[in-house]
Image 1 (tube, rainbow, N blue to C red):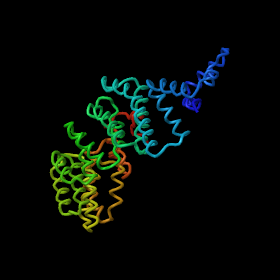
Image 2: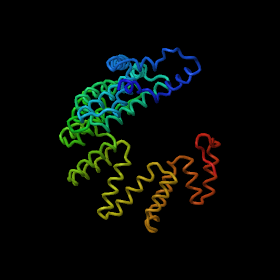
Image 3: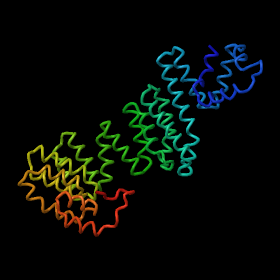
Image 4: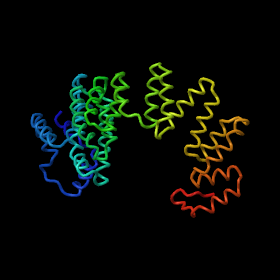
Length: 347
């Protein structure tokens, strides 16, 4: 049994390379294997605990190996998963602290931390780790989320969400995020409250920022899902008048509502605004396809007028598509020679 406990690193590439190097040298008679065979179980247990005590990576490999070779109760198995999660965190925490202190670091360090954070998030999502362990791990992650200086923010949020397995966990996470006083963390808190059905908390946080089309879209869809369709449309229309940008989702929402109600005129008008917002050959073709022949006759001149606001490259493509070759030549003459290394227009 004790010998099996020490096999945690048999698949470790560094160990295997070391083993190959060892084969090149003659071994003393009192070899490692002889010592293992001579030791009793108590000594081997002491050795494993001593080696694993200060090496999170070794501790994790030991626990992972033993999970596969011994029989555990569900409670003990969950506790072992918690051990692995904390070992992963301890394995990456020093490098993460360095990245957080200096705003980044060597690429290999960043990649290693990102890989371990991904592995930790996966472990949390797929395991029934006890709540106390998940809460303790979340408390370890929160200061780095607040700092926003490590370059690992998305991965840290993945770990934090992985540590939240029910509404109680999510509520605790949202309340901590609120205390940071940051737009991004507050937006996460707002989404959490919406997700777990805390309507008043969501609306309070939502009211603190109504600036972009995406903000109005978020609130409009909230009311729509609540069944208050009149309020949803009112919010959406207000957003069309007041929002300062990021309108795509809001326009799509209103276009869908117009289509559902059979208001084709409003539907096409919204789709036209969507198409010319950033007019490209793709959006031009898509809008043209939506229109019936008579409808296109009324919109074609408006789309053509909107070409002046399109980029030169897209303008050139649209003129060529429309077979307006003289205008295409004029547009091409005004352009600098396209550098195809950076996506220049080529024919």
